[in-house]
Length: 133
Image 1 (cartoon, rainbow, N blue to C red):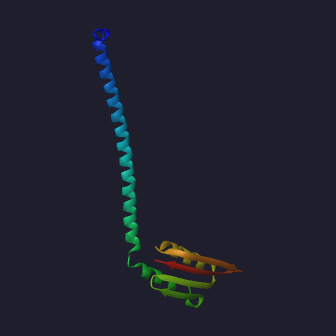
Image 2 (cartoon, rainbow, N blue to C red; image 1 turned 135 degrees about the vertical axis):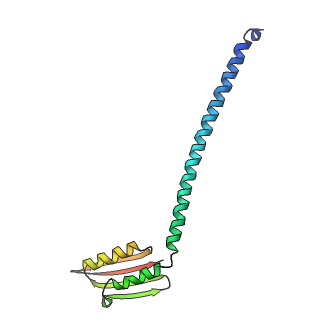
Image 3 (cartoon, rainbow, N blue to C red; image 1 turned 30 degrees about the vertical axis):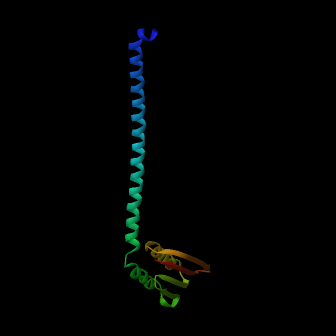
């Protein structure tokens, strides 16, 4: 009875309610899609970085770069032990410039430094380096 008189207003209210629910649904789906795209972009960047690191670490020339460390200091100051893909190098009676050269070269080669021990006695330095690749 009273519903008959306000039938058009009820239809408009229902249509407005439907339009608002559709708007909020669209808004939430768009936000979810943007978040999903952002997450996929982060994962893609991580995958790209992993592939490039795998290429660097799988390089066959790393062994030759490690062998070039022999030429940095006088062989009488060095004990060199290389087994497979592991290097154990002990240096003694080094000057500050020689230590700087060795550490800079080690940090620029893609190797995993397992041990880097340095001791200063007077004006000379002693170092022990263990690394693998």
